[in-house]
Length: 330
Length: 170
Image 1 (cartoon, helix red, strand yellow):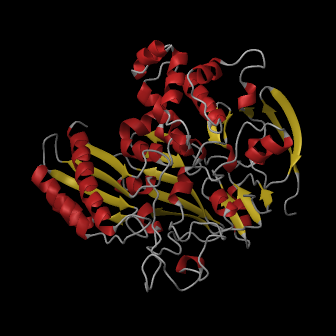
Image 2 (cartoon, rainbow over the protein chains, first blue to last red):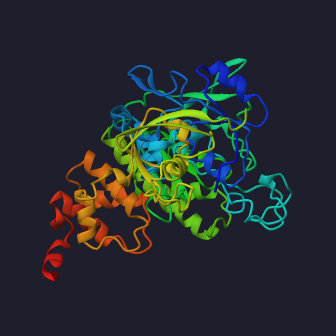
């Protein structure tokens, strides 16, 4: 498959890049592991690609004890997964980053790209030769092939690092021609399969910030996929738990699920079930059951909804247990 | 201007090349078509099979998903850069002697991936070898002989538990 023709621009400053990205038919390229596939399938045919890898200060990982972690959006997933400070203090992020299209994609892909990953569906992510004649919602039409007679797009948001970062309470910085703004990572997501994030043309994600977790905090990310390597998650769960003391009650919990909906889902009721309680196997069981009620998977990409529900329950249980163990020994 | 050719300087297998390429050429296309280095293969062309694997500054990458122009100034190793006509690289020797090659299509990618692994970790366990080649799909061999061959070059054939049987079969 040949890539369609395009103009290739390599701005040296953020302002230049933002200005170029406001133009029609222009897309940003960083790692390119999602964009180039879509261009080969002729799902996207931008006339101009803007390479942001030459812009200074987008590729770094820095940590200050009182401020926390700061990562440039163009940092590769490999550099994040192998960073000693990420592995030691924010291990849930290292776990999530190493699993994205492992073992090779992390060398090439960036965290910004994973955050801005487009939603996916068997019927959308195909070359134009394969596609059914009537366009689906995501392709601008008014049909859904996942849910017959459905009235919305069911394309799934499947990025691995996002549930992990939302569980860490991450914030992101977005640059545009009208300046910079900060927002909680979870506010970036729309819940709409057609366009999962709210970035507008001309806006570039520049950095991710995570404040240092309080003492007795542990996090764990689990990914269930058909194969151990390469695949996107069928279900991904990121859990971060904070205890009042080494053996104390749970003072905070964040449980975030990926690949179960059109955006990452925070299981807020399951979090409440854990908060304030003394964690034991029974409470973990209850929390996992509550989390299951907060997601509504449909049969999608060859996976029956009933199976997906079982995986959500089991994986959530395992992730909570693991995060709890880590919090106890933190 | 759309698709205007640009200057590209890359070092491939130790030799410096100065090319002019259009932006929409991937590294895989340039290696195969402009430099006649057809060891890297186009199979899935979407970053999911590893047949296009080459080493860019020591890192194994899917060259089908790398724009050639993004490799300005980089050091690239393809399978043609390993061994010579007279003397094969130890990994190539091991693949041949262990029967790790059937149709041979995955082999260049497998060997380069193994080289990248061994350059970083000269004594991997079998588990680590399997994890490293997890991004390279083989339709023929079932991977057993490939893993044996890679471990054989480290002197750790016993690690896989297959080494004894292999020696007896001779």
